Amino acid sequence: MNEGRLAKCVAVLGTGSDVGKSVAVAALCRLLSDAGLRVAPFKAQNMSNNSWVTYDGGEMGRAQVVQAQAARVEPHVDMNPVLLKPNTDLGAQVVLHGRVLGDREASDYWKDTEALAGEAAASLRRLRERFDVIVIEGAGSCAELNLRDRDFVNFRTAHAADAAVILIGDIDRGGVFAQIIGTLAILPEGDRARVKAFLVNRFRGDARLFDDGLQILEKRTGLPSLGLIPMYRDIDIDAEDALPLDAVLDPPEGPRTGRVNVAVLCLPHLSNFTDFAALAGEESVTVHYLTRPRPLAGYDLVLIPGSKNVRGDWRWMSERGWPEAIRAYADSGGQVGGICGGYQILGRRVDDPDGVEGAPGSDEMLALLDVETTLATRKTLTRVAAVWRNRATGNDVPVEGYEIHMGKTTGPDTQRPFTRIREIHGRGVDIAEGARGGGGRVWGTYLHGLFDAPEFRRSFLARFEAYRPSETAAPSIDAHREAQYDKLAAHFRRYLNLPVLEGILGISLRSEG
Picture 1 (cartoon, one colour):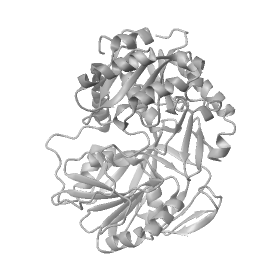
Picture 2 (cartoon, rainbow, N blue to C red):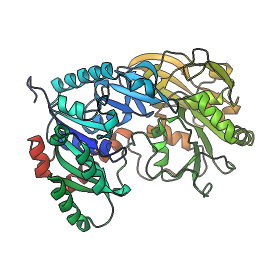
Picture 3 (cartoon, rainbow, N blue to C red):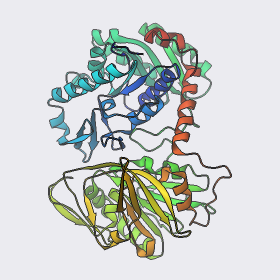
């Protein structure tokens, strides 16, 4: 244990964005936890609309939540002190220590990051006082020369924490020699000296065919290889800020016979896409992510997801003809659901008097629910336990979820709630939540993650004739995630050069927990 000493730190920095840093950090967190160490992840600044609410009501990036779960520790906003949530092409909402700081244009944000850097450094210090090892994740490329003096996520954090750096490149996107050798070549000498090993990620095929490639990289860089990690297909880890790798946008095929077919609108500012992962994991369910309108007949359910810019995404929907397609589908008896921003879009109008999402104003919406939403500057951040009334059985089915929204929705259809909240952060309540309309065929809710609960998911899907639950009982989402983190650690353990990693950390990882 730490016993008063600051935790040892190791940093996983990338040759670019989406090279696998987040997953590699999650794997290292589980490996270190298996070795009996108290380990925590840290990313000074994340940019993602895929966020999570902690038990004390703070908002943080989902990637650091995944990493904390892999480390077997409770997620805390110190693990992701600065979160940027893009809400326009040029700007983002800034979340500091779990609370909204305000909106910033990118050009303004990058003028001066010193105050945020100081807050991030304080978070890292607090983590180092509580844990044995901190695994730091970088952001994007660690060699963006034009941003180096303002970048507090990559080498600035590594230097401050005296962290050994592992440089990770993605061979699947091509040019891995240029990625790794080129990155090291343009780094300042002090940064270059902190890099202790490189890792090649996402290899396809026979790994032995790249033995000479690793030798070339070792010779050209003077660094040891930490390993060659093959691509995997059978490990289910939440993605950081994009749709799952196996998700296909606008697939050419339509609804499939004998299955429950779900269409999810892929909005430009889609947030918390992980809401639908559990649905897609059901053997008899097909989930299609759609950007272009198509005939919706044959789909059992159309879902409008969360959005970081509801009015902007509504204009995108209108330009593409989505309102007409969805209204025609609903008029023909189709079921339409909305989560968070999607719930607001299903209503009659969204008012933004304070310019929360851009210029102040109002927009008329789908009007499939008799509700109206007024956006507000104060964000709702809650973890809740609720119940959903199964109309077929008359039973109340437990649901867990979290709310992340800036607005209040009112209107007659809220008198027919989708769920009733029973607990908020463990405190007993009885609050109507969401709305139903169209004879129950149209519904909206603010609860993210509601499909994660197996009992609710199966009860909800049972209304569809084609639904066939698997013969074995569905695991809880927590049990499923635990199994996936174990599989991820085993995958990395198999292909990592453990002696190199142990030398970097000064820790033995030979025995699994």
